[in-house]
Amino acid sequence: MSLTPAELFTPQLPFASYSSAFCVADYQDSDFARYAQPLPDKLSRAVAKRKAEYLAGRHCASQALQTLGLPHTVIASADSRAPIWPTGIQGTISHTQGLAMAMVSDDPTVRGLGIDLERKMSDKQEQELQTQILAKTEQTAFEQLSKAQRCPLTLIFSAKESIYKALYPVVQRFFGFEAACLIEHSDNQLHFALTETLHETLPQGTRISVYYQLSDELVLTECCLRTAP
Image (cartoon, rainbow, N blue to C red):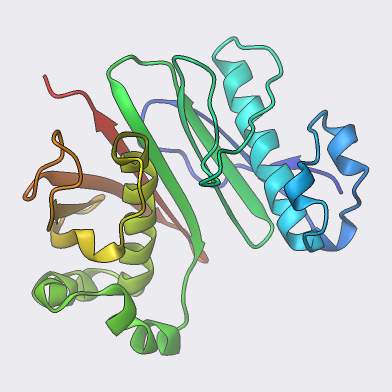
């Protein structure tokens, strides 16, 4: 399996990033050695798709870290499956259907990063999955977003994935989509408020903003949690 550099989007956050395209059908276990990444024991019996996505994500992470001047790095996984980044680094990985991307930062004010790549949902999926992703309190903001974008539910789903990834290093526990409520949007950002206190530094009502951009088939969302000034 070849991991080919892919210019998917120009991220709006000012951090190092790297993207790759890959073909799951070409995957072989020897690809891990080819890209100097160990195949984790817990993935030894996983399906080819899971292994290929893991390898592609770790390769992107290693390449992004080299942009910061770090040598080739192996990013292991915690029991929570969250990546374990080098000391002083915050990072995030995403993959979707043959594409992977990673973003990293050594900025000490960054407490967490989250990115999410998604293929746009079909109109049918956008209708069917609303009740699973949206809270009733988000309906008004969702309707406003629907007037501006053709795939509003994909955008919100992706944004909430990015929020989870960005906040997890601080919260250190699972929390659901209902913890963030869409309030409003602009041309390139979705704005949310926390519906519950997730951490002493993330009380209920905290505003979280997520950058977004779209191509013909894809959505990218980006979230950065910084130390309060």
